[in-house]
View 1: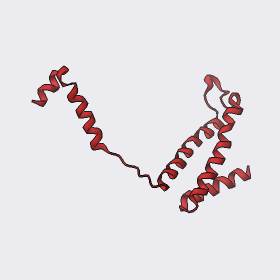
View 2: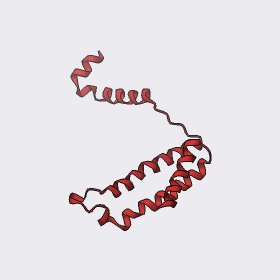
View 3: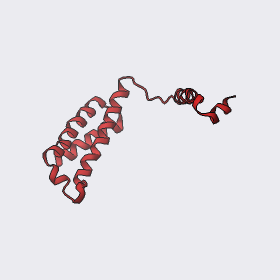
View 4: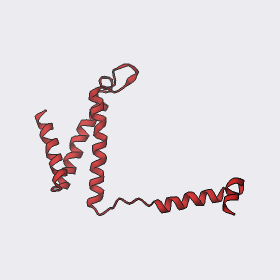
Length: 113
């Protein structure tokens, strides 16, 4: 237990300080792989309550999926990727789709003219 706690603290320090990100991501992958393997090894104990709802331990393990996503985001951004939302292009595609349906929609067709 102490080893897992120390490992999680080291991962948190790597992400919080921005130093040793590569080591932090590898530690995160190693720790989360071990934590999530419990779902495969003990599924009946983790989903034993009625209606197969996850127990508290299973919820803790499922939470690790979010942390893995965080690690993937860090990996993507350190390699030069940027997070960009292109709303104008999405709006353009939606408008073009609605325009293609215009012959079938008299109300929309009347708005265009």
